[in-house]
Image (cartoon, rainbow, N blue to C red):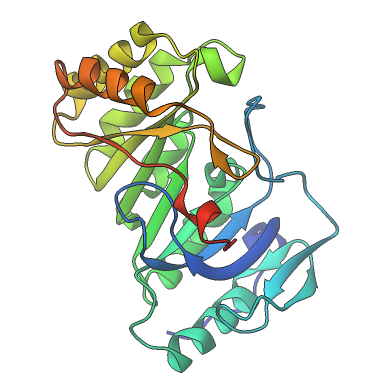
Amino acid sequence: MPVQAMSPTEEAKLIEVFSSIQGEGLWVGCRQIFVRFADCNLACRYCDTPHQPQPNCRIEDAPGSGQFRSLPNPVSLEILHGILSQWHRNVPGMHHSLSLTGGEPLAQVEALQLWLPQLRELLPVYLETNGTLPAALEKIICDIDYVSMDFKLESLSGAQTPWDEHREFLRIAAKREGFVKVVVGEQTPVSELVQAAGLIHEIAPQMPLIIQPLTEQGRCAVRGTVLLQLQQEVSRIHSPVRVIPQTHRFIDVV
């Protein structure tokens, strides 16, 4: 499908575009194309990715090359579609999906509404999101294939857990295949995780809960005994629960 000339409203602010191995959640180990969007509506203490808009974004020269060039922001669908089309032609079948990550991709939902129908013709769309913008998700859920949704617990994020937003977001996300991820630390109260598990079991009982231990200095920062205890308590309420660390940190990929 040919891409028409873009207007400014059909552009988005990006941080980077690259090909790598998914290191989190149910699809860990799958090769994906990552499109990292600028901007986020939250400011979590443990956030490990840059999301402030920059004059330029970086685009990998070829999938997995580790060599990047700069493109001016904002980026148009025409430019991005051209790059991804070439990657798809050169290595057909290698990529499982197109990961929209951030920042928070839904902060630029107006662009996504225009982008996704055409990008989805190349690859299935995998949304990585903080799970706090349900109205935005509703606008594009028809063009999403997989949802990786975070629950932002107060003990780690430093802000009150947005339970109402998570509830409404989960109701919409449950229309697609996916999971809920909760980042935990040594001091995460069991009560927070139990409340999250109860909400998931109520709204989307088919969705697995992924307990992801905090990563610090390239290592898992939570003891195994703590993770075992958290998993045990959560499984009393919501049985599909797994403990999966950030594996991409251990194999030294972006």
